[in-house]
Structure formats: structure tokens, C-alpha cells
Length: 158
Image (cartoon, rainbow, N blue to C red; front, side, top):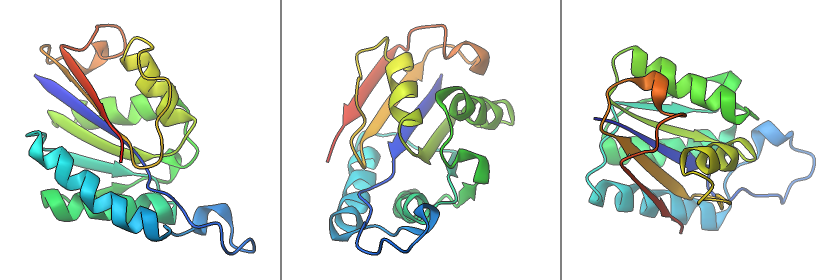
């Protein structure tokens, strides 16, 4: 069995328009939501072998909340910043092919919503900030996750 958790970064702060987009921090709501969503995910029994994250500050901070919950250090990847659904899927597959059975990825929209939509058979049409979409397959072949319907899927929003 293989599984994936897609986590859209928590709500960011737009208070300083001089900051580059990559450097925007979380706002108070985002700081509050990230650890709550991480605990909710842990309560489902999901356990990531790997946590992948965009290098953007808001994604790194969100990933840190999940890392603290699961005791798994995030693998920061610059190519996940503003990545498309196919790019996100490729990163997940690569982590799986490297030996992970369970991958958590923290990144941005529209890529996260597009990937959640594709994996859910278009049943997930929006990933709000700090939403967590989980998918699991009975198969162990990472190459089929975008072509075989998951055995189970779920969406948790803050």
C-alpha cells in the first residue's frame, strides 16, 4: 500500500507588500492552522516516510508544523515553488521510487488543487490554505497513482 498527503501551505501574510512572494510568512491564522491540521492528520493514522516542501517561507513553516508532529525532517526542494500538478506528481513519485511508502508534500496552488483534482477523479475542486488531501492505493507501484483510482481518499480543511 502506498499513500500521499497533499498539503497546501497555511494562510500567508500579505502585510508587507515589499516582500518578495517567496519570502511571505504565515499570518496568525496560518500559524494556528498548521499544527492543528498536522495533529488531525496524525489522528487518521497517516505516517509520512518523507516530507517534501517548497522552499517558500510559508510552505517551509507549514512543513515544519507537520515535521514536528511526525518527527520527519522536511526535504526542501526549490522546484516545488509554483510547481504544476505534473511537477508535484513527479516529486512524489521520485520519493516513492527512492523507497518511501508514504509521502507528504507541502506546496502551492494552483498545482496542489490541480493534482488533488486529478487524483480524486475531479471530486476535489479546491484546496483552501492548509487543506490536507490524502490518498492511498492498494498497489505498490508509484507509476500508477495518476492512472489508477485510489482505494481511499479524504479532504480535511481547517
